[in-house]
Image (cartoon, rainbow, N blue to C red; front, side, top):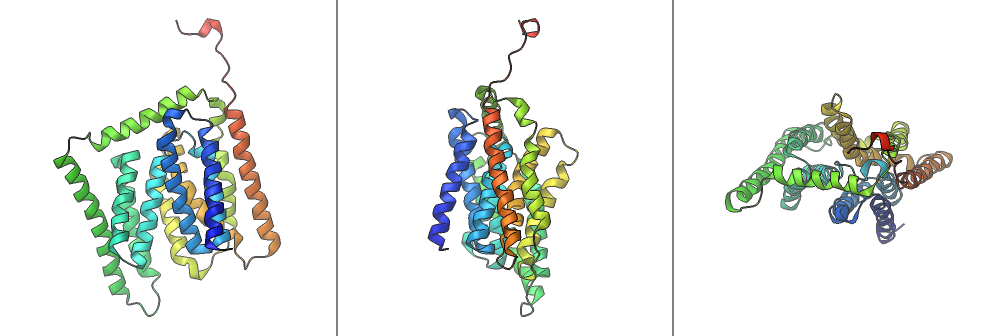
Length: 316
């Protein structure tokens, strides 16, 4: 399968997932949601293609793109795009530090803050430091570990320094609202979208079902020594995302789960390794089909109008 075919199929999957997502949202939330959705899954496809090849990259994209119950109308869609972009930039930068990847770290941090809140930065910075240590621990025998650690820490610090300078310049020389104001606007648009859409909220109560197939495939994946760096970075991302939200409210847990979806999908895509038996790959494909069908079923249920309140309990 050529890269061109992979990108065409990936664009088709992303368009289908975006159409399913927008089916439960009003047009007012469409542009922001589509931009974040496309950025998120462009990163997932590119990252999966680099690690697994064409089939694994498309599988990761499908698992993430059709996790619609989590991504549709969720406040975590924007932070998920920023998290995925920043995490991928950090991983690639530490493998081959360049000015482009360093600037991408700052860009991903800005996206995560603009769509989420400044509270998302500490987990991202912690993730960057953990990945720098992982890069040192997984260095090849011909790479001096001391030099690898030094280069990793310097590249990470430069990336976050560029982000800090960019934020300072915006606040110093412009009259735009602060980052918190943008975050409030984004959350307000998402809340208004959920209200205006008239979505059946009973369907939202089963959002955790969208994690079932990615979690199952991630648990059954084969672990390979040649992928130890990428596998460890995805596990660290899940750790940095989920640990701070274990005792948070339900909506906070749902947002964290939405941000974790692309990393779970990338872990689960190893089930399509060529070295695995054919029947295991077919079972993984069957689970993927069930995942897609479940998303479509959820959308059909969510589009049903919510039951009207009895006259005795309607507000005056």
